[in-house]
Image (cartoon, rainbow, N blue to C red; front, side, top):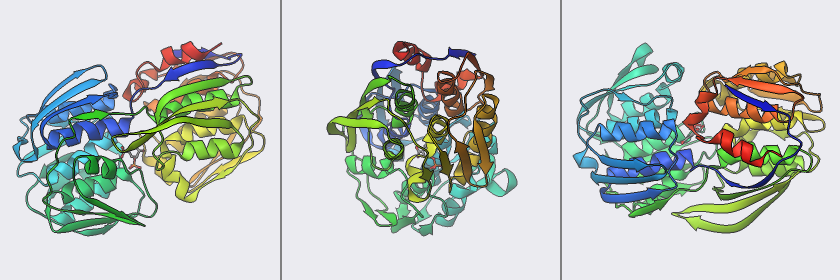
Length: 427
Ligand code: S3P
């Protein structure tokens, strides 16, 4: 368990581990390209290690040492039928993206995961992949794991996704790489576009347009030899929030990815009144990166909904904490996707923040928080969800007394070393 107490202030200069979404894709796409790729800044968290383990079981040679990974592959056509089940652990990105890849390969495979994965919806990828020609089975008609996939020749499709999900979009695009003709995915709002950017850096033509993206089948990936993964803005978000809401707070976070499909947190912080600067903007393998400098200033409640939601979907737990320290009401809406993350993040945040005295209520598609309530340390649980555990740790440093987070081992999914980084900046 993790114990935190109220901080007098926070300051310093830190880095955060590599971006989870980009680390997954770096390993996956390097495994689909012939030759050797060196990845640095990789996130050595449980989720991305699950991706490595799945590709090793398909015959790819992968050496991982901390944040350095070397992938040597014979290319997509050389992937082998796995002898064992592919275990994705807690990782939704692994299972959904791999399903797209496996759908176009002429063999059978079975995907399993942990208790949380077993409850998460898979039809959102299974339905379009079946339409393309893949044979996929799973519990309740293919909604839940274990999934069993028999891939083969696929047909390109035009697919209108009802959710703005990069996992869905990416699964279809990856299947589209092996399909006859062109595959097009439309989504209601733009979701993170790391797949599109990284496929381009592997020499694949991907056409993005307003409302969707297309890919022509039969293209080969040509590895760029080196990939440098930026720091994860979703991990930086916990410390950005901490510095913005603790009087006297001042923090620099270096080398953070600022892909515009991921920077909803920056927009929210600014709209709430935070003092935030972007410095040293540059581009790594098609991904924009900057150093973020944030200082405390008085915050006010705001309304968050619509197209910004996919741009900050993983940051909503920490935004809820931020809202408890702002003046006035914060309304978060259009965020029903939170119910199908690692846990139901609406229920989890409402229940845990209430234990601490926050005024927060759940709505059908989000939550409403009345800022300014005095908060007290409490015994919280993570629900096995890394982002709930970290959000509650940050809530603990703005609350009187001691906060205990049970199930903090979940943090290892995306942020190994979170508690050390926290200790480093606490004053
Ligand atoms: C991810 C996409 C998002 C996000 C998840 C990572 C990705 O999920 O919540 O943490 O890497 O594509 P959805 O696509 O389900 O919204």
